[in-house]
Length: 427
Image 1 (cartoon, rainbow, N blue to C red):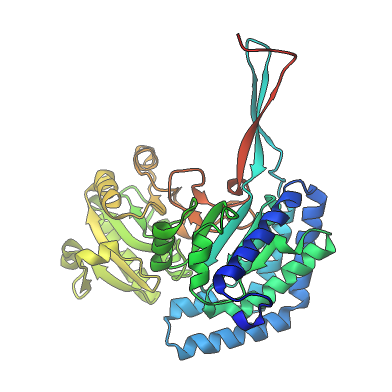
Image 2: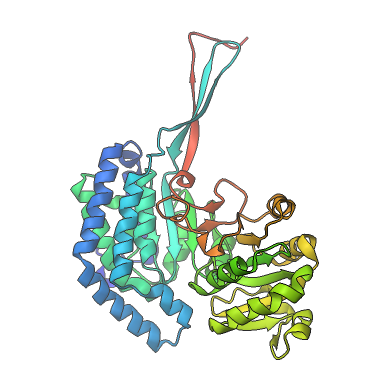
């Protein structure tokens, strides 16, 4: 909290100091060896496992405070840590250590007729500000990914996860110190005052290069509206699953239930099920039945209700809602064309899945839908950097500039050009 921050008279002054220290740390970090960064990551993972009891005790306090404030079950799920999730945090850092170091990688190179040799090379972004809610694991994921990509990071977690994040952050600092890297390379904002968010969004007088928000729609909307530096973000994960008439029914049932119900509170959870009109007689009712058996509430279009009476009718707002709960809206569409039209109208451009055996349907789905992640015959819950082999992610970006989809180590770099000559001058 603010009273623990020495020699600072205001949130703004505190944040400017954090920014200056992050910028100073970014310079040596940008040229740190792969060995040093990996040593830090492995030491962080060990520190997390050694501090498991402390982390879980801190999380109990956060969960108690959250329960008393009456938040939704999906929120509690994102906030909750247990032994398995702590172990997963440590494992994620070990996996990030095993990833190739992106810094210095030659993306492409070519020779010009005048003899110049040109290389495009990956470089760190610099200082990244990460603003997030409820998920204490983001503290570790963001810190580790930014470190691997040679960036300093300023973490601003939500008040709901403050105790858990603080305890995890202490483990990250131990890892940095063990590898001889600047402790200021990963800083956690020590106040829950909302003014700290505004200060971070201002760019801290040029100290911050990029902002990455990870949280609810209101948080991300505020970041996008107020940020004076570039933002990697998505507003919400309004994900669709389209079941084509050519789909294998058993496969479709398994995928649809997993896409919705495996974890309902994550951004890759399916929120809308679209069923081909050609599959009404064969697929629609079995799909609804397996969802209902799994404990999912169905909000149905008029066509669906005529086939399966007694369901709750869907409103126009349902097609635009990220439930983050055991609720799904279901509609019948006129083949792949109808599915594409529905997704184009309502999607947040996060993740969509098609279940089909017809290759022409799959090609249209992949070619005509402009979301960041598209899947064929697989659950939308695979929309995750770890599942993509990235060793974790800071979030899923749905914009079209620089980073899109899972934001992992490569997406946390920029590039520069190296041009080698032999005395050329321009005529």
